[in-house]
Length: 284
Image 1 (cartoon, rainbow, N blue to C red):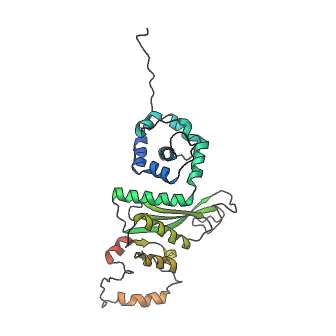
Image 2: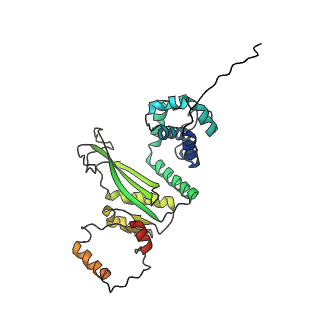
Image 3: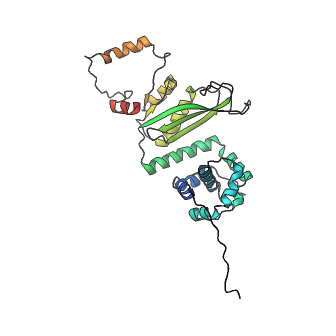
C-alpha cells in the first residue's frame, strides 16, 4: 500500500474573471439570452446564454474577440469558471464551430430587440438610474472590408474623412449623464442619419416605459416626423434647428423678445417647453 499518495496541483490565474463574470450574471445575461434565443433540441453542453456570458468574459478580460482563442482560455480557467457559475464546464463547448453557431442564433433582429428591451428594464430597475435625459447620436466605423451589394459595409458619407473605405453606421441612444446604452441600431454605411432616430426612440421608450423624457440630439433629429413622434408620446426634445427649418433671420426675430432686457421669462406648462433646470442640465 502506498502510504504517501501524490496529489496533482493545478494552478490557475484568476485575474479579473470573477468580477467580470459575476457582473454579467447579475445583469441576467445568461437567462435573458436563453429566453430570447432558444436553441434546437439537440443542443448539448451548457446553454447558449451561459456560453455567451463566458465568451464575453474572455473578450473583456483578454481584449481579444478572436473565436480561435476562447477554447484554450477556458481550458486554463475551468476551475475558476466552475466555481463562479456552479456549472460543469467543458472546454470543447467553446470551439470555433460552436461559437459560430451562437453568432447565427444571435443574428435575429426581432429577437435581439426584445432582448435589449428586457435587458434595459432589468438594469434600470436594479440600479434605480435616472431616465430624465436620453442622448442620441449616430457615428460610422470604417474598415478595409470590400463592400458587397448585400453587406452592411458600404461606401457613404464618411465622418472619419475616409470616403475610400467601406463603413457601417451606428445609432446609439444612452442615458445622460451616465452614458449607459439603451438602444443600438446598426445599418448599412450609406444610410442617412435622419431615419434612425425614430426607431431608436421607440426602443428606448419600450425599455424605460415612462413619459416626460428629454431626448437630446443634433440637427438631424429635427425632422418633422421625429419631433412629431416625440410630442405625441408626451416627451420633450432638444436640438439645434437646421437652416432648412428656420433661417437666421427668422431665428433672430424669435429670439429678439427673449434677449430684450425688458422681457420677463416665465416657465410655462406647455408640454413642448422644457423647464430651465432640465434645459441647463442637458446643455451641461
